[in-house]
Amino acid sequence: PLVLGIETSCDETGIGIVTGHTLLANTIASSMEEHARFGGVVPEVASRAHLEAMTPTVEAALAQAGLRFSDIDAIAVTAGPGLAGALLVGVAAAKAYALGLGIPLYGVNHLAAHVAVDQLEHGPLPKPCIALLVSGGHSSLLLVPDVAKDVISLGSTVDDAAGEAFDKVARVLGLPFPGGPYIDKAATSGSGTAVAFPRGKMDDGTLDFSFSGLKTAVARWVEARESAGERIHVPDVAASFQEAVVDVLTRKALQACRKYGVGDLLIGGGVAANSRLRALAQERCDAAGVRLRVPRPGLCTDNGAMVAALGSDLVAAGVTPSSLEIPADSSMPITTVHV
Ligand code: ATP
Ligand code: MG
Ligand code: FE
Image 1 (tube, helix red, strand yellow):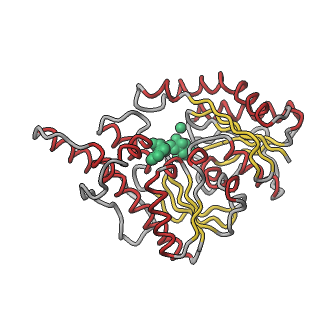
Image 2 (cartoon, helix red, strand yellow):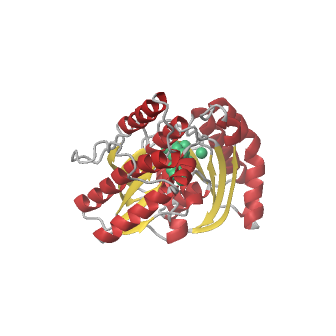
Image 3 (cartoon, protein in one colour):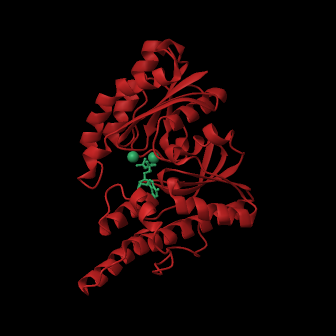
């Protein structure tokens, strides 16, 4: 069956079309340029941009796949979590397409979709696998017996998400928003051992994370140097901060694999695009005999293909479609795979 996925939880209007785990189209419109000067996504601006981008982005996806509306068998949409007004635009559009085309609707969890998307690149997920989900709003370790049915949270951040820490530290370093990709780039010419920044909750025996102490430590370090009239070497600070984040993420991800006896680790979410995270995870997985799966960077950040991928799993699993009355749920818990 051909599944069209709609993603509007943040600033990206993403449309994907898949059949099984084969990706046929992935089109995206982003309002990030409109938000960048505010240093964060402005919800009202994002909602309006989704409204304007929806029809052209859907039509572009159909054209990319060489399909017509009448070919589509099911609609999947991000029903949460995310910005309420932004989600609402996608959910309303999805209901309209499902009703107009007389096809089933599947409301899915954005975070589970960040996990499911890897199958478009690497095939069916091993059951179970451990997933490290690291994005702009979330950082969690998950036990995933079956992404279409059951996602179990093993631990999560007690304060900032990893992506949020990247974005806040980038601001301290005078880099543009969203800062993750800029820190990644700056760090390539710096040293990860230049400054010993703290690793929050590193060996506390839990699978939780904490990044706000690290963010504050970087801000204090920079402030102290600047008020002493010293020039800071941005690449070194970026690389040292990044090293602290990915050291904790990879160490805890492998602790989770060991604790639950699972030999497959998946990393998903926007921060999974980070080059150092990908490299260190591979190194540590190799040493531990764990198989690692990370989608290509373009599938890590928000997109419509991920929503279509999860929708496709739900269709295959014979899950009952969603009602046309489903709400957008801005705080949908990660354990709710679909509604
Ligand atoms: P959520 O998925 O929690 O709702 P979101 O959808 O806003 O949040 P994503 O699009 O999944 O987030 O990820 C965006 C985050 O990923 C931003 O914080 C961004 O800085 C970060 N990010 C993107 N690329 C990189 C990179 N190369 N290195 C580090 N962080 C990155
Ligand atoms: Mg985004
Ligand atoms: Fe996301």
